[in-house]
Image 1 (tube, rainbow, N blue to C red):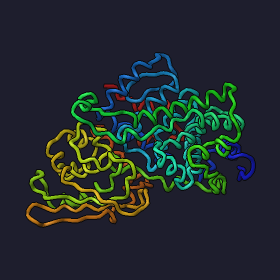
Image 2 (image 1 turned 90 degrees about the horizontal axis):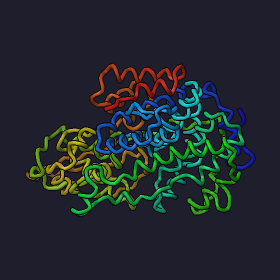
Image 3 (image 1 turned 90 degrees about the vertical axis):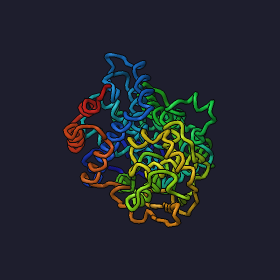
Amino acid sequence: MPNTGSGSATRQLAEFAASIKFSDLPADDQVRTKLRLLNVAGSVLAARRLAGARLVRSYSDTLDAGGGSSSFWLTGKRGRPEDAAFVNGMWAHLALLDDTVTHTGTMLIPAALAIAEARECSGEDVLAALAVGYEITARIEAGLMLASAVTLQGFRHSWPGVFGAAVATAKLMGLPVNGIMDTLALISTLAVPGTMAWYCNWADAEEAERLGTTGVTERYLQLGANAKNAVLAASLAEGGFHGTSVALEGECGVYAVYANGMGLPPDLSYRLGEEWHLAPIGVKPYPGSWVIPVYCAERIVRQRAIQSAADVDHIRVDMVTWKRNQAVVFPGPFTNQEQALASTPFNVAATLIFGKYDVDVLARATGDTRVDELAAKIRIGAMPGAVTPEARAGVVEVVFADGTSIREDASSMPSSVLRPDTWADMNTRFDGMCGDESADSRRAVSEYIEHFEHGTAAGLADLLQRPE
């Protein structure tokens, strides 16, 4: 296994990707790769209970190819691999419970599994490709420098995960080094950086009526489209389409265009194949955008129940900066679930009213006047801190109508909630995401993924079919 250190960035990454087998992964990272897969499975099963599920399911019906080779999860339908990657990418991101800070798994896992099912790849090959995909993304982002740079320009911070998705897909298709290089170049052209305009999702009465209960839908369409384009890029490379070998570092390459010419990360290829970066990947502990304050709200409501906004004088929430993403501080009223998902005032108010916060509470609390009235009493303040789960940056203080107050911060939030790194921790999370799934169904999915090196993408797809 070469520790590549010469040639263009695409060649170094392609040589690494082509060389890795599942047995090359350290034992802990073999497990972590499966944990990432289980987390996405839980996110998918959670998504079916949200308003956007109707749209995803209806659109997937238009793509049903009958004898297609790849499964559309939650529908029982099949179609082309790129269409399955698109639909399943939307399912993976809909509940906003997937990987963080960058939602790599939303693009990587649907793309890789769609091709793996079509090509009948082994479980070991799938896991190796997923590990490579996560590592490629980590290297290209290099400490989230690229994600931060694109965010400042108004692009979606998550989109660099498409590079890992494309490489993993190419690896599962058996492309040689040159083919993987072409895939990286082609995805540099085909990727969907998107914009964050949807993060300004508040509306007057007329617009609210037009948007209905689902609200704007760019969020999960963006990442679903990148999953699809990852498959497309690899398929084009397999078909003989070529791209430049300097797609990343060229004068008009990815870093020049999207990162203000900052140049290649100095550690892009350092100890490539020897050091892995699966351990730092976190998860969304609750459905939503900036959700760490939910933990504080949970601790407060355990000490004193809140029946209505009349019980409260005001609420102060301090959290890390939200930059341009004004929907994070939108105080309502909330007319659709996408507004609710993005808003910290919503998820804090819903937690205080319902005593907890998950996708079922999200669905019940959207449009609840008690939540709207309480959210209107929340004031957001910025606090310094890195935009990572490890920062645990959040403080909530509720000042009650009688003059008393309760203040909680997130410093005691367990690492197992932010970054579950064992089967026990991830199974606890998985059970919470699955809602009304039977215990037998949950265990079937978990056990299949735990031993996925002996399984297949088709076998997992069968377990993720929940047609309504």
